[in-house]
Image (cartoon, rainbow over all chains, first blue to last red; front, side, top):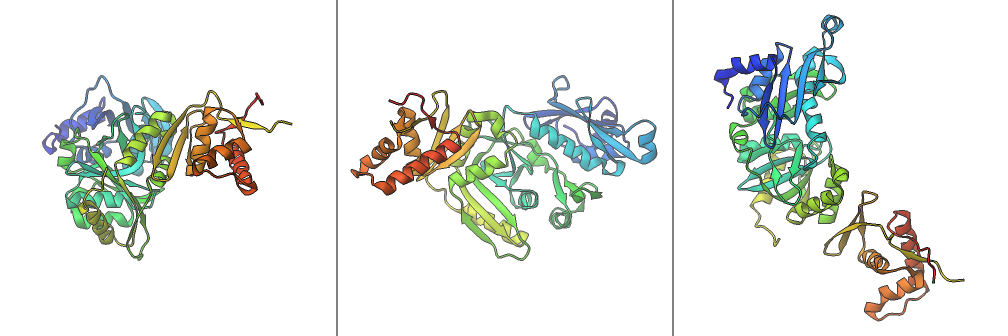
Length: 305
Length: 97
């Protein structure tokens, strides 16, 4: 296991041939040629075990855009599996761009799983899927729930093994934006977050380091029991309303990364997940209201399944 | 002139799921997921069994309730068939008996 005491080792590996990190069912090899990026990556991934370096699912690097021009312009770029990926970006945006490059790989590569665009947390073996568009409040709710006894699976993707109802954990750093950073900082403490990076296409971005326990238990799947469609509206009264299973399937499918790729297997897998869940739309105006509504949902006795 | 018959394409693969009165059908060839009413789902299942024209289909749908379809029902069934054709779940049958 990586630990703060071995930061030096991680730093040298990150700056060298790359560090294979095991994250749930995936192994990603990551690295950088930017010295200032290594400490942030070491911090965010410090609890992750090393993976099998001979069989990474993907390789993500962030380095200088070009030996001469890139350095002069303060630009960097990402590469995936040795190939340049995306346009060059400002070097000071390297950390969020690294995470987004990993997101790209996670969202597009592991088609042996059904991949839903959703946050997922777990408690007592039961999984809560938070499905919604960007800005709906998924990541903020996901992050806040970690401090109410829930285990992190992911703030971005629900991975479901076809033929099962199991949701698998991929507990990577939680991406927080703008006002959410301060909100979660108050709950988690400043030392739980990586550096804030301003001026990105999503505003100011910071990452919550995954709780050690969540990383330690990343091999333990969850049985999904609730699907919630959050909708943050500042100042709105909290409202938790049922959503039919048919509606839930159609809405979740629309936000899936590979539902159409998996065909009938994707449909059957998602239908099996939905069948075992109670599904709800949650409108909330404050984080406290959203959390209270989810708490009340989790305390409700299971309906007949 | 014989009435136009419709059917589910012979090479169509459909996956179904039903919850209460909501029916979902996944059409493998198009990759589309459709929500159908109970009547629409029943119609699709009849058309999967063999080609039917609008009047024949209306009769099959009304049969469980022992009703005789009137002009309004026939009109509804014709529109249902048009909708199912539009989304590719049914097609005109070539062999009109």
